[in-house]
Amino acid sequence: MMMKLGAAALLLTLAACETTVSSPVVRFQRQVNYGDAKGVELVTNEFGSSDLQMIAEKMVGSLLETGIFQGRPTVTISTVKNKTSEYIDTTNVMNSIQTQLVKSGKVRFTRSIQEMQTGVDELQRQTQSGLYKQKTQAKVGQMTAAKFSLEGELTSIVKQNNNTKDVFYKFTLKMFDVEEGTIEWAEEKEIRKTSKR
Image (cartoon, rainbow, N blue to C red; front, side):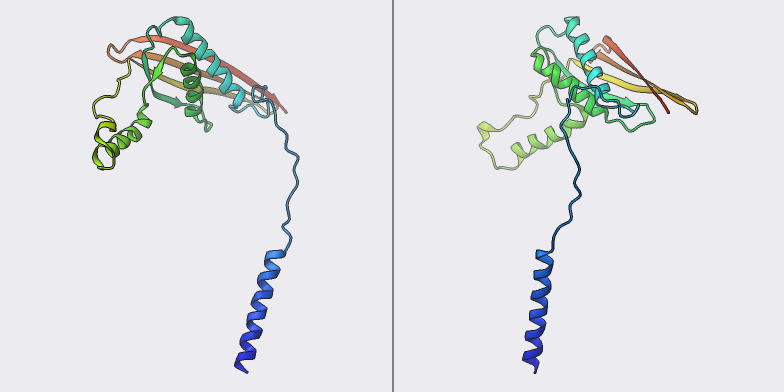
């Protein structure tokens, strides 16, 4: 009797597993299309991809026109403050600017304050773990210091009534000489976006 009950329980368990495995999965179909990554995005008047691209183009163009990058100086990104009421990833804006400047071949970037701990951890791993050949280890005290530091902020002014919402963004970026503390370059990009009901 016990053997029959055990066998029946086993068959029920297997049947349940089989039903679970073979049951159809319901999927919701949505049409997805690739768009032009450089196309103007006007879904809302919040900060978007077009704004990021316009800011990066303006900052990079202005920096490269100055001629300040003689001899490929080293630059670090210090802080970029978001002073708007929106969540905006200012790191993303600076990554675009940094990438374009590096591609220009006229400047070198050192690790930012936020990235520095990762570099320190790697140096310690190589020099203190005992895992690496001594002649291949990176040596402590050999990092290149930045000559210039980029600092910026993104601000906004929002005005609205029953029918219209107007958002004015201003992105300001400054480059300081680290040793002297002087502003060697500054630029702004202003963007206005208006929506109506």
